[in-house]
Length: 269
Image 1 (cartoon, rainbow, N blue to C red):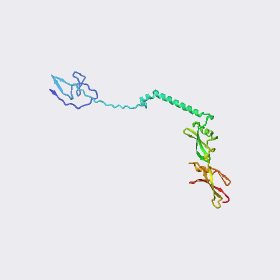
Image 2 (cartoon, helix red, strand yellow):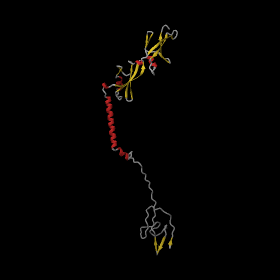
Image 3 (cartoon, helix red, strand yellow):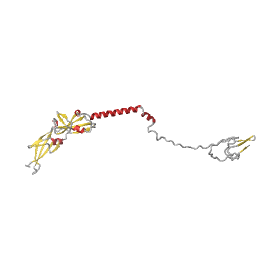
Image 4 (tube, one colour):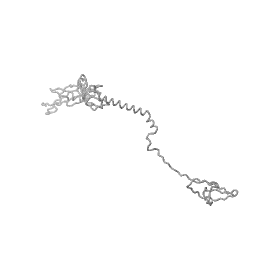
């Protein structure tokens, strides 16, 4: 015969439960006291041959959840992964360092050698002729074997002459271009292709009555192709009426050619 008692509501125990075993004076079941007074439990009580059999009861406890926050990075971590650190510390890194030091040393030696070129070894190279610029004048360019890193490369360039048509010429200007010192020369001797001259002298008479100014016009010949006709018109010398002129007062370009004009003083006008 069994006696049934309604179980009490579930109560969470703060301490770790211990199983109840018959005959153990220190073990207690959930819901019982040492004096044997029962407050109720959730199991059946069976009587066998006059003895009461009480089963062992283990009440589980709710585990306390713990949240552990771990930082992905440590303040003392390196910025690069360990694998890359090992590669950087390998022999390849040392080779790159050695090669870089050798290259820097070579560049330094070359610069020092270029800066220490003696004056008697400085010379012009790669001399080239260009188009005519003005009357009987052609432009030439040449490269100077002096380092542009030198603080005095401009003074050295302007004071170093070049020989063209058997004559010595100093640069008209110097410039630094693509790592090279370039000198520009305006050669005014031996350039027959650049010599222009006047032809077809014409007297247009007085510009106005009482103006005391006479109008003269001449045709400019041998003007180079694609040249600035105004430069040649203004620099080609002329001689007429027992007077000499370094060039025309004004120029006129037409389908018949380039014409220079002069307005000279004349008491007869």
